[in-house]
Amino acid sequence: MSLKVDLHIHTVYSDGVYTPFEIIEKAHQSGLSIISITDHDSVNGIKEAINYGKEKGIEVIPGLELSTDLEDKEVHLLAYFIDYENEELLKYLNFFREERLYRAKRIIQKLRNLGLSITIDDVIDRAKNSAIGRPHIAYTLVDLGLVKNYTEAFEKYLGDNCPAYERKIHISPTSALKLINEVGGLSFIAHPGYMKESILLNIIKAGIDGIEVIHPSHNENQINFYRGIVNQYCLLETGGSDFHGGKKNDEENFGKFTISLNQVEAMRKMLLRNTA
Ligand code: AMP
Ligand code: ZN
Ligand code: FE
Ligand code: FE
Image (cartoon, rainbow, N blue to C red; front, top):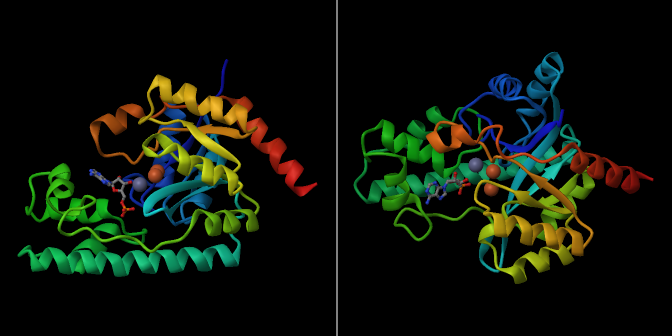
């Protein structure tokens, strides 16, 4: 039997809709044997997932998704096998989450200036303790009846270049890589499908460990292309569903975007080499 591995999953600790506990249940039902919880700017869901995963026979690799900026474009990086209890890391992540809160406040102010009666408390209620992202604001707009649906919230207000858009703080891929290295993790370029090749090559030169080859946004050609780059530069390969939950196509993706155990073994070998 081939073991199924999904290394890109979000929970309620960022902008996903399921708890780590529920993710383990779903992973168990879908026959996944190894997963990674990769919340945006948060490691708070990892322990719960690891503990419940042990009961269900599912290995949970501690993960994280960081948003960085390069040449004015947002670049997401995935980190795996991080020391998720490292004080320095927790300090950074708290800082990023605070910055997300300030940004949400700026977005809310813009929405209010456009005549929408939404408050930051409405959004905080919705986001609970998680890193606040635009999806939380979109769902709040839906709840308040201010837009028809989630998509309209992005098309009219929150999407890039829309009237209530606000950027997150800028960190460079290089400083994110440094942070990931310091906490013993491996670093990967997330879903590069939208990225110019020159940017991809810059990040490879900056010392990334691998590329996310398997992702719902990648077609067959892109998969082959990124796999070629992985081989050419002796990088690692990762992949997963980028599951957030709540939307129909997203729900259907769970358990269907996977990599093989061999790829995880290659990561472990790289970790051994790094600590040798
Ligand atoms: P944030 O990290 O707060 O900028 O939010 C990014 C998230 O918002 C992405 O991971 C997507 O889930 C969602 N998102 C961004 N742009 C759109 C869009 N045009 N339509 C729907 N969802 C979007
Ligand atoms: Zn997300
Ligand atoms: Fe991402
Ligand atoms: Fe993601």
